[in-house]
Image (tube, rainbow, N blue to C red):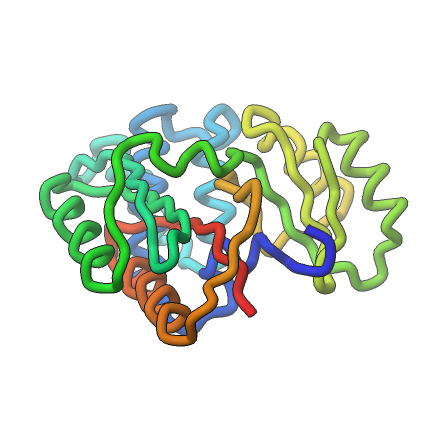
Length: 241
């Protein structure tokens, strides 16, 4: 990872204008509802809900929206049932792609994802077709301004993190997914502020696209997927220029 902030290039969401505010709120609301239905409405005892609320606050989502999503998850308000689904496939020049979705209509979402792959010179794969090329990790990203690398490393390891990587003005802290919430909580209490705080898929190896046309197709493929309300995250092993 040295020399490249691969998390920002894999994730393709932070810092991009294509994720409109309303769409972001819709996606986070779904995350909150699913987290509540699976683990209850108290974030102190529901790590997934706590993570979703933190993400909502990072996106400046109003408290009314957060509370409404929690109530829907508890069944206090009429709400749709959402299922979490992972799709795997390949983009141009064999770039591996994982698409994480929350949907109330699996047929619609599957058709849309397949259409995106087909339209932009990729193809939808079967379960497990690309997953082996990624590791599932807890990921925390904080800027490096005013932070000594040795201090960050010591704080992170003491909190239970597995690794710390210094990349393009940021520290990327990796954790076991089951320890993510505990590590995050300890470091936040220690004064750390994270621009990214979530579990996600990191590629084991990165690949470059050689053709300029295929680079544009790959970028468009990721963009149109992220604009779909059913799509929560898109992960790739594409190393952008």
